[in-house]
Image 1 (spheres, rainbow, N blue to C red):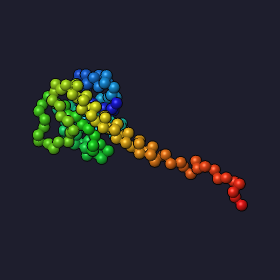
Image 2: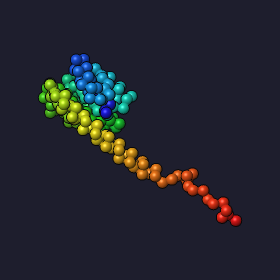
Image 3: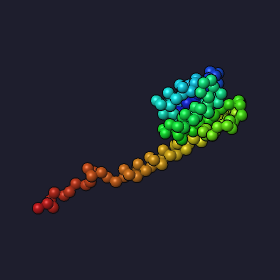
Image 4: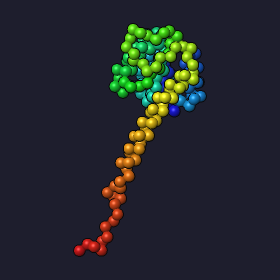
Length: 150
């Protein structure tokens, strides 16, 4: 389904979410801090990021801002999780905010919406490629009847 990056400094949160998401068919990569998450984003094709808000060093909001500042990830769906209330002091640079304890069903439903949108886009792109490829290439044209040559 989707290639998901989980970012949380709490190993228990990471592993419980990872198990739930992998059981739902997603590929999951984990990072224990924002620095590692940014390195993963540079080298892997991540489709959705789920991050904790309150982490030491770079927090979840700062990670969202740093991610959005990269042109390759400016439209990456980001889910911000926290036991605290949604931050009001910063511009909203995340796609969804879920307050812990968040429902796994709700989280998976949000992920599925983005995965379905990505697949729908891929189908439209593929259909366009098929339409362009239906005309025969010059090398596939029918042969000329040699008997009609002078």
